[in-house]
Amino acid sequence: MHEDSAIESWIAAMLTGSGLPVERRAEVADELHGHLQQRITAYRDAGLSEEQAIEGALADFGSPRVIRGQLRRQQRALDRRHALSELRRHTRWLLTVCGLFAVAAAIFAPGPPLTRYLAGACLFAVLLTTGSVATYFASLAERKVKHRLPRPEHHFVRSCLRWMAVAALFLAGTLLFGPVMVGIAGYLGQNSLFQSILYRAPEIVEGAPWLIWYNIGVAALESPIRSFVVPFFMVLGAALLITLYERSRCVDGQTTLVGD
Amino acid sequence: MRFDRELLKGTTETFLLAALAESPCHGYQLVEQLKRRSDGIFELGEGTVYPLLYKLEAKGWIKGQWDSDTALRRRRVYRITPRGRRQLAQRTRQWEELVRGMTLILKGAAHA
Image (cartoon, rainbow over all chains, first blue to last red; front, side):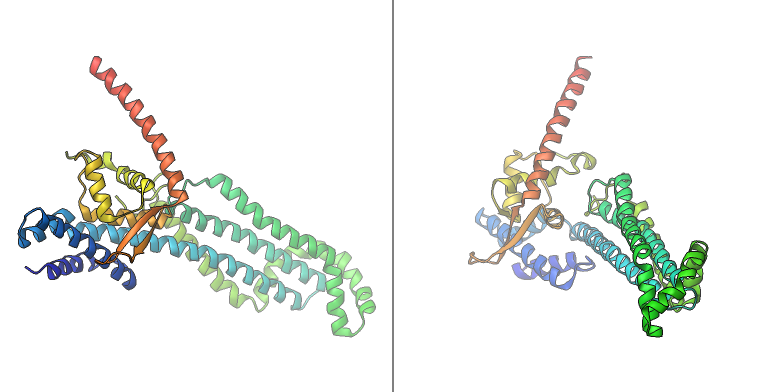
């Protein structure tokens, strides 16, 4: 039995079906090849024949099936961790972009101007709050897969507070600068800033308090963003299902990467 | 000696961290050290060291680098990272407590 061919066939048996990426396989093969060669050399130096040295080295190394299983479980865990990390990142971006679309659509939709603007802001706030829940689950699952000690309560509160603080700031900004924005929009439309503010003033005072909440749903469903809303919530639902599934796989807050 | 698999969980990782905390090693050296330092009590399938090393590397506790100085085949040398040292310190404390507790319990059982 030739040394190199015996090592190569053992490594090939171990790597087949291991799930490692191609470039990683080459590295692992290189590393294990070096180890086996050293072991064979050590046995040869100890007085064993070529045949015995190879057999002894391969026996010491263990079953390729067992090692393949360990590598596969490890790779799956890494892939899952990466997927969750990406999911969390993309969920955040998706929510922010959808929120901005919602605001833009609400502002330029027909209806009383400040109401539209506030509706957009509220919709944005709702989306951010939803974002806090979605990213909480995604990051929780990610943390668990990373084998770190999760602190669900603290993390959840912090996550919600962070997102809601942004939403609150946005709402506060809307209340403070909404009339100015409406004025600018009116100025652009009617070419008269003062005229616009004067004409809109009664609507601002009378219409806004009652129509804000009513208009959240209406602004979303009657504006062009509905084409974004449905796929968005489908993606969000899928994300939540995946993260819940990942949570259910974690035992006592810990999942090992190798599995055993 | 054959140990219960559940009992051994985590011990190999701790050993690998401890060995790498002393000096950077490649896989072959680690296996040799494990045999020598445990006085033959721990005998590991040599191939099973690598998934563990990759796992520790994925966690950021150790870092592997190809050693190009050798005239033979390239070897990957592993070094412990600061995070790995912190992890080792934590595990060492846990082990010491565990051993102390188990010793007290088992001594008590032997005298009963």
